[in-house]
Length: 168
Image (cartoon, rainbow, N blue to C red; front, side, top):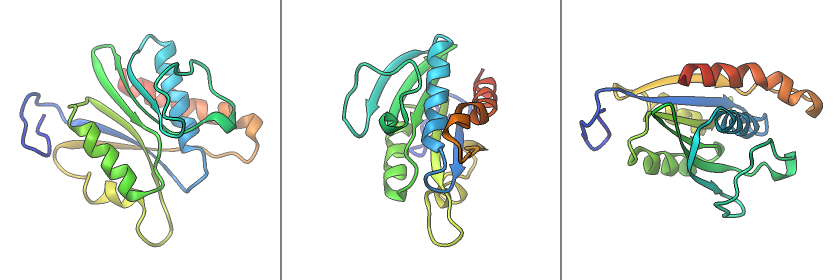
């Protein structure tokens, strides 16, 4: 894989799975659901960091209540694949810094969030400029928003299944 530094250890491209939507539309929840589904399917959690509380353990194995769904950075191994998760996606510099750190670890997949706006710079712009080139495969998913929190899991579950199937 040719990295930004020119490293050639593996010929495969890094697969960026970008969850995109406007702010406060459920990107983090969707990524939490993917994390939990991968753990449920037997993924090994190599590292986990709750970016708000700075806790590294224990990581949840069920979807936390809405008030506890802090952003996370995690690394998992599943079926021989290195999967890195960056759930925050609202501030360009934070997203870019996290992705640069993750890229140093030579992942197979990066699941990340990117807010979009009608105007002005947003993290989504990173994926239309900096992270769109020959070393990345980019697949985008919408976060599937619902106004009713009781329907959130049901509405997002098909997207979770599509992401897991793509990785498998």
